Length: 466
Image 1 (cartoon, rainbow, N blue to C red):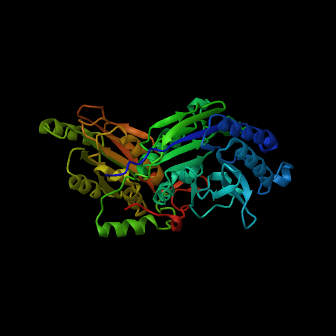
Image 2: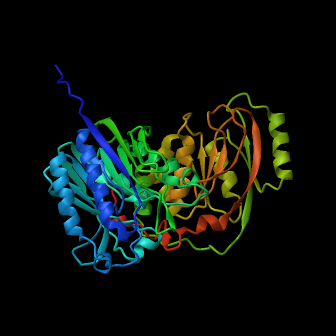
């Protein structure tokens, strides 16, 4: 008789803290200690705190402690360790701290229930200005805890699919994500950030892991505005708990622990060899950025069955009259769509079919090989299709054509390299549209000044599901 395996429920908490400039680091430490006490009061197993919760994120110096005359990193960690021991909670704290070389690092420190440091992770994908004072990490460790194996990523690490992928491959069932999501908008509620909007859910679902992300709220130094919206995401991509955009918050969720359940692509041995080589490539920014060539694509969303050939012919004529250089029937066979796109001069295209887009490796490999457009043919009938398409586009800085049919839940659309849906067919009915693809936008892999989607990767640290 098979032995029954008991379900283990783990209580996760995230503290969304008010952003404070480094001059107010003592107040930030007070907020941290209060959050730990609150986690203990609800018997949380883990508390995740924001990126650089102490002493601050916008440091403006590689030696902030000396210049600002605030408690040192070791003093802050001692206070946090004492609080964790009293509360009997595992704490993941974002902190700026010098590494072994003496250089400042953007770290997440895991402190266990006894108050001892149980692990340290240093952010590997630095963002924009934080590279001015931080040295990036190069390892992706996982940590054994009394509630199973966990991994840690920090903020912009979530933009690199291989990072969460590696943590899942190494057995982490939960990824703690101390973050400082920033953006611009007319109000805190309207600040845009792709990780908040769709990418974090995709990371959880594609790897079959839970993710707990704690953000700051408000503004720091008057010029860096935070998204808020801390979130705990289940392994199926659904939100277990969410914080608002504005104001401090404390969120809690009970999650059932289980082994990672990754989405994988079905590939041949030869394809797997090419995928490993491409995904591990230390590729620089693509060439041809200065070329402003535009290719206009016509998309006709037809039903998968009972296609009206006359209506299709008329639609194609109309799309061509609107300037389409190539016209795609979304219900055509993958080989037909591939042939049409590859015959289009001045643009590099690939086709990914069905559930293979749910694993990040095929799209990543195509992008690293230099494609500008990925056509997703016959996407599954699921409401997560658009989130996956937007994530694949923004993480690889390519265009994604979602070749859905008129029978699908989500309509056909074009997603731009920043993850925005730029054009779409009408939902549920045969319909078409044209869109001018700016090839240079797919060949410029810079995300913000100083941050490159490809050149800033650390492929030697990655493990893949294939």
